[in-house]
Length: 314
Length: 292
Image 1 (cartoon, one colour):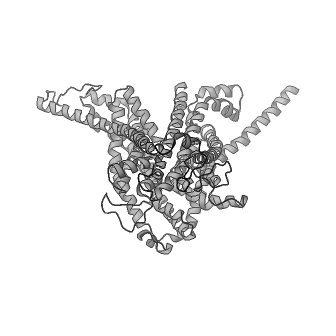
Image 2 (image 1 turned 180 degrees about the horizontal axis):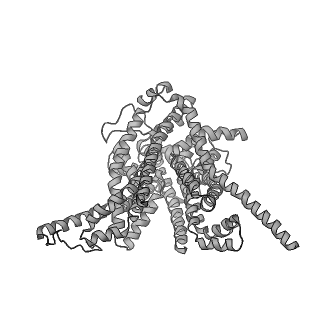
Image 3 (image 1 turned 135 degrees about the horizontal axis):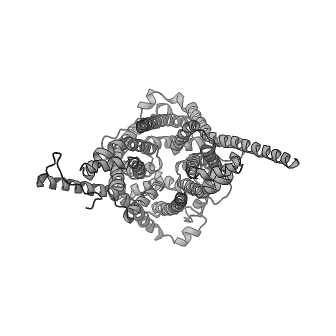
């Protein structure tokens, strides 16, 4: 048990403690240290647990279905005869909704980040930021309800032949959900840009808008890229909005007005039913879950790499 | 002279462009607030008529006019109490270890990266972990305990990161002063670091709990879609929670159930907003104290 600071065991009156008490103290310190290490290990075991559980259960799936069929098949019908296990329709649905979400969240989130970091007075910022935090704290099941009962009927006025469950309204609402994330991550990156860069540009006669878009934004670009990637990862892993509003028909399509199914919504669909433990149908959710985990993990790692890059630079 | 004029004309144009775009930036910032207002008004309009005492004290039912969320309300209370009991000590313990004990080596960096990654794992994956680890491998069944343990693993990264920030904000001089007086490491943590970091830790924990309360996806994987007409009486009972009940009502085609869902959402949002208000209150008090 190494500790950075050695503590001399001296009682308050300056006399050395009796050795028994000193030993008790040392034992207590060691026990506490061990307890704290155990706490920290919980997070390691969580990761190990996730990986082992997903790999072992997905192995049960890949015993029956070849990896090639899983990644190249264009039909996903594990619950009907004839069964097909091509994950592409689920992947397609996931990326369709996530892409719509990013198209909404990126411009709006970026613009609000510029406003909050370059324009807003302190008092305005102190009101707006908690509001964005509340928006980020709204449960996703509430967003799902909002998509299905408010946004979909609204969109049906514009696209009369759109079906009730569709990728567009789920994607739009998902975009609104991740606005706060894009905004706060990009704002962090912009705030980190040194004052001197801005002042130099002002000294050359640039307007506030020119400073924001031609000096601050380029300087913060790796933070903005990070915000994008992390928000995309969040959108890919988002579950309830798509489970409620996007439908449950796995389909390989680029038409946002159609009903689709995402990977997460598929896992929910199977979890709701009473699919018997040990069947191929049951193992599908772990194969899909493993793919989802790997995708989001890669995006998070890349995103964190970009965050570290701008932190190092300034 | 002519050059000067074009410069000023150009400058005017640049300033105009800046002003127009600054309005667009302001507008974009307002989009979030606007969405929040529309969402709340929509939910209130749909659900407030269905929100009454009977709704809060009845079990779910096939007849919408008799249905309520009593079992979900108590289920949420059960799961959150247990989750708080598990995640609070483990989360703070990990944060203390990383900030006060762990030497700055590769192991510490590994644990830290690992926690950051766990915070980004989709909640449904935690649901799958809970399903195969707690429900099946450890034979807890689809119980309150399995649900609470799953939510514990899910909220730990958030709690740890928040607690670390709070601990890091305690000035180093306070620690050194205590060490100079002969305090042991644990005495410094318990008597110096924790008391001044506690409000920050609490704020982070409350926010993590309020996120966990609203999580439907992992809870569906654990509990499936149950129709429960009893209140769980021990940690091994089956359970349902508010977001599952809301999801259940949303996914029914009948209009009346949509209204029930909206009423359920109002209850959920009231719970969350009061937790958020508590967190903001704590944070403001804390900030004032450190400014003095």
